[in-house]
Length: 103
Length: 166
View 1 (cartoon, chains in turn green, purple):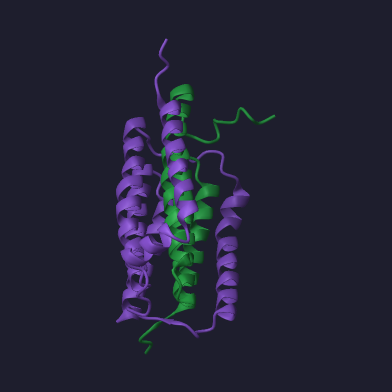
View 2 (view 1 turned 90 degrees about the horizontal axis):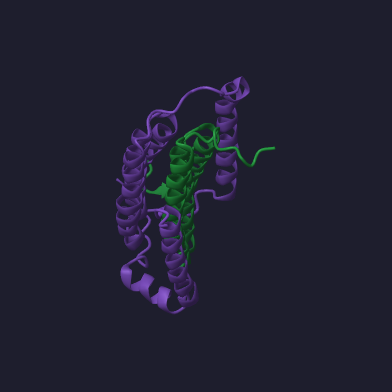
């Protein structure tokens, strides 16, 4: 019976969460859910940063994760404002209907 | 003990993440995402990142997800329609995802054989004091740039979401 967790388990968990985020980003049709999938991917990357920080016994990974968090907060504010504007102009939340850049 | 803690919260995180992708109603996805972030905060504590665990709960689960739920309520977002999904994606999506994950796990296992074992208290440099010292010495310039970035984000959000006056 293991008493300590191998570092590869954390990295695998991070990969699983990232892959689920990619799947949500590609398969979902609602703008808000696509946006939440991006947040899921950012969280997975943060877990990797902190795991490598533990591996190297240094604090640099924590700072990277901190900056990722800050950028994610800024991105959420701007992204949700964009979603509000799209909804105001087009009255839809489906990414299939927002295709004015096509053709 | 550490293994049990990791397994419990890793399984919660994965189940909640699957729920984020599978649920059709955005509010269910948002609540599941809060579950992912909460369990990740526990894993950060296991890795010795005390400050980031607190920041994860406050910033992500607190601020960002409240913003999401607020927008979902404001737009009265309902369940998404199922139309226009290609047969190819339905058939190949999940097997390709599993193949990708198996490949990833294989490479991670090969690159990081169990030389480093994680146990609680194995890394003590993740407190507020150490983070603050690094933030205001080594990472001072990125920190200042970040404040400018947040200012720009606030201005951008206001400009995008304001009502047209005139």
